Image (cartoon, rainbow, N blue to C red):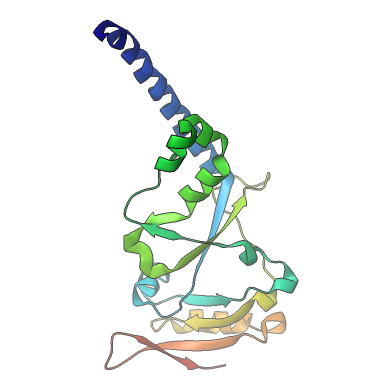
Length: 199
């Protein structure tokens, strides 16, 4: 009995290493072919302003999901926050058919991988639009098109410079004339932002 195990164990290890390499290669290929457009549910989180607007010097755009326009935000997926990183196979999938079957059903695996983040980011309340890379695009990012009606509000950071503020206000004309503009201000007594409508 020990001899059979000693003979087959190295083959099993090699097989698992080959599967692991296949999974890594597949994941790297898929990462290059997909794009994420990330949005969040809130506009007043101090950490988000510090992280994503260059310490309150930028702006935040509020997008609306408008069903009649059939826009990308309508297919956004909520991010799931967890203590453990998602694997290519969860326990249930392993019991039902193992790693190879899970790889065959890679849509679920891929979705789990791209919509899960560490719980430490839970304050973001993030949603993600996942799209495939366009054939002409290969820089790792691309510009997203949107309908002007999708933008309903712009929030200017409490430390935005006057030139940037003026540039943004100049752009919010014509098809964007409906957009409300708010200036963020630090609350003098609380650790929070207050927003004053300026247009």
